[in-house]
Length: 341
Ligand code: KG4
Ligand code: ZN
Image (cartoon, rainbow, N blue to C red; front, side, top):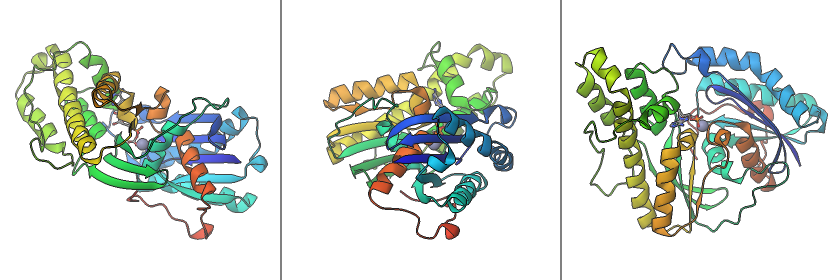
């Protein structure tokens, strides 16, 4: 089944062409250079950029796949969660295409897309996965941080989530405080490699309680107050130590709650996904945890599969289409910025 997938939930304009779960063409047009001076995504700028780019990005994905829009059987689009103005561009474009070319439409949850980034195959059908359920997934990006029990594909139970900032958002905000631009995660990763992660003593949010939820805003506030009165030269001299300390506090928090959830839910497989999983240090820590728990762990095999992309949305759409979950009234489909999984 030939699929065209569209993803515009945040600051990447993405399209992909798939044959079932195999990616034939994938295009990501990143807007991050538009937000460097803002320290975060500006919804109206994102909307205009998506509007300008979505058509050309889809055409490039079709061209890469050596297909025409007429060849496509199903259109898949991210319905939410995400930034409302950004989501609207993708949803409207997908609806117009589906109506104009008389295609079936599938609406996908962005977080399900991140989870299923671990099922994305290349055009040769690699990698193949044999997955034992239940799977316990940890998805961490700029917009969400959730521990989700996957009983099977399409059957999800959120067992823990952030009560305030997302993990990636915390890294982005700390980077902004340090004057490092947006997005903060990748710069913090590079700096942290050369720093002392024990340099700054930071709190462990919701540490001793047996709850599985996260909270990152206290961490960010504590970081702010600790360095608030420092002269700029001192901050600059210790940039690597500060990045390493903050990153370590975020990752320790992520792992502590995930470990608690593993003990409680006894999954057969672990899974990590979302933009922050592009971080090598976090991947190493998760692999270590998996070894200790004697469980296999799935993580996206390519760096671009961690951050936003339409290939993962296409695969989520493929599974939904296999279950017959198509949009019944295409004209009535609306973006849903707070869509729950
Ligand atoms: O999944 P994603 O592309 O978009 C959302 O759905 O939010 O995730 C973006 C987030 C940003 O917060 C960014 O700073 C973070 O992922 N990120 C990283 C790295 N690459 C991206 N965080 C840590 N280390 C990285 N290498
Ligand atoms: Zn995302």
